[in-house]
Amino acid sequence: MASLVPPSSLAWPLLTGRLRRPGGWPGGSSSGATRKKTLYRSAGLSLLLLVALTVLQRGLAPGQFLYPSSSHLAKPAYAGFWKFSGKTPSPAPTVATAPVWDVVASNCSANTNLSGQAWFQALEPHFQQFLLYRHCRYFPMLMNHPEKCAGDVYLLVVVKSIITQHDRREAIRRTWGRERAAPGGRGAVRTLFLLGTASKQEERAHYQQLLAFEDRLYGDILQWDFLDTFFNLTLKEVHFLKWQDAFCPGVRFIFKGDDDVFVSPDNLLEFLADQRPEDNLFVGDVLFRARPIRKKDNKYYIPGALYSKNVYPPYAGGGGFLMAGGLARRLFRASQGLELYPIDDVFLGMCLQALGVRPTAHMGFKTFGIMRNKSSALNKEPCFFRSMLVVHKLLPAELLRMWELVHGNLTCSRKLQVL
Image (tube, rainbow, N blue to C red):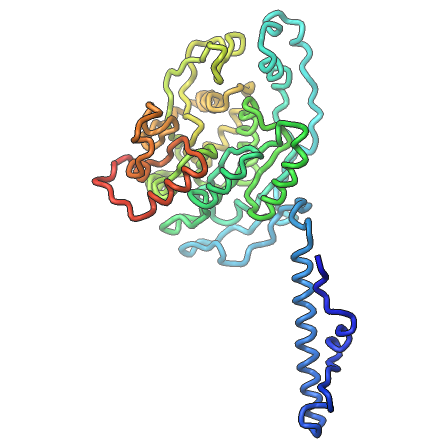
């Protein structure tokens, strides 16, 4: 990139103000005071120009956004920036006061005691792998944003994603993931994405560099040093619960969902207006008396050796659910006393059961589509989407289009009463 610093032949005159027109200063007989005033003005403008050029050159330095900074700790916020209805926000985390992620290394080895057991040897390889390392619960953080919980945070929107799906994250940022202030002076709505690392070794460094650039642009990614695989979704669940307990204990409500759902923030906030943060709120598309799937060709197949009961505890479909912030902290405590389970939705249901909390079903959460019949035209009807809280599932282009339709000049015969 060509240098933006002025050529050396001009640098000294710019700094000193010794720029003359042919024949001397204008008028040829200006007074000493006028000449001195002109000199000061020229020197001042030259200095400002050099500072601006230096800042611009540094701002355009190649590669500056490709590597994460050594710390994501926020500087103390300016007074009143996140102030709502006279509430005084708590200060942003600083180097002196901020909590830390206390896992700095992972020296996890396989539980070889299982290898010689007949029931273990009869399992499929991916289940063997899961069981060998199930005791490895926490891993180091690669990207962190504790400043997201600075001030008065009413709703934290948390989205499960994987490193390769940048297009989904971008669509969410442009639609339902936009940060805002909750109406009525309730506080801020903040958004975070939860990620592990690329599952393919040969792609890891490339995608990690791209993710670092993305995080520098948006500052909304929490990443941990474990592979992003289907069975590791439960790791993502417990890592977020641990993170929230450490960095965001005061948040009042949490929405947690996938990166392929449609969400109505207005409807979420309208629903939450009647809720209390201290209650055991856990609401979504709840499955009651769901049975473990025993067919090996199914994505959610679970062998009897891993779960011998015939019925799962009640749990919410992971496409999207709402919970109180205080309950999330209690779920973290409960999760520490349970063995990890390969299906994250079910594992969270097990944690709820351990606490004696029953999740609440809500018809505004459609994590299996508006209609179970995938070919139904109603699954693409914007008037239905306008009345829902969460609908699963949409591709990024479908999400952007549906968002435009729902928030455009849409005329519907009536609005469904789901709140």
